[in-house]
Length: 315
Image (cartoon, rainbow, N blue to C red; front, side):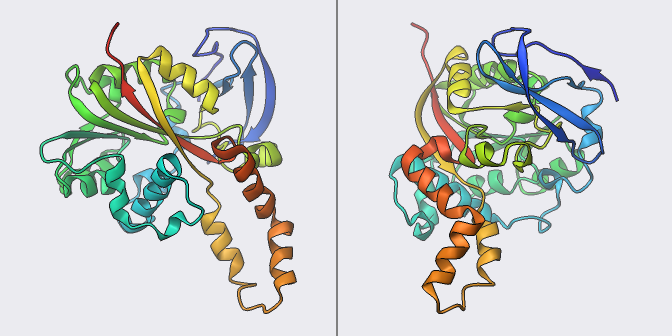
């Protein structure tokens, strides 16, 4: 493994302050997460270089699993639907929404082009393909790319920067929890802007370093995941990046990733007839404070958020 010390990717400042020292994924090393003193961007520093980072992606890494090993397509689609509801029309019971609400953000339309960056085994791209899109993917895992190709997704194996897509080619580009893995997020976003049509839609989802959970749990926050997560964004820092890349934010959707944990935890208390016992569960586990934070701070409190952006025309 080779480590490199880097300046801030956004503002090029070389001054930062340490925030967390966290155990790495897959290996017993510890990594330092710092905050840029100039722009506030959080990133791992020092970090594994491009040639070394693959060592930290285990064979069971979720994005590269075979179909059936991870969440079902229905679960993934419902997750996206909940995010969309959060961004376009807030409701406290978004889980009751039909999957057709996806069309609010990405209307089904024959012949439109959609790129899923980091498409994994292709479940999401294939779902859109069945709804009229010409679907493409980019994937670094050869095994995952083969699964996606079998589903009818036209996959470019390797990095987005090496795919050589034409200018202004895609109507929709989805970048769901990929940007935090890249060594140069600024270059990545500029490439997304280049290949997106004018007024095309980019959906960019990342963990939120300023979420209630991140603030409360600190170095124990599950979504830190160094060094596979090299960068950590807030709405402010990602917003700056997008503006610099020629992408205009239209809306924000948010998601807090404790739904499965809540479901599992509630198994032990759901048969209780005592309302006091149930309330005690929410307070004791911290979910009630999290929900209150979501009501007060909105998207800023959520564990992850998605910016829906349009490519700006040059003025």
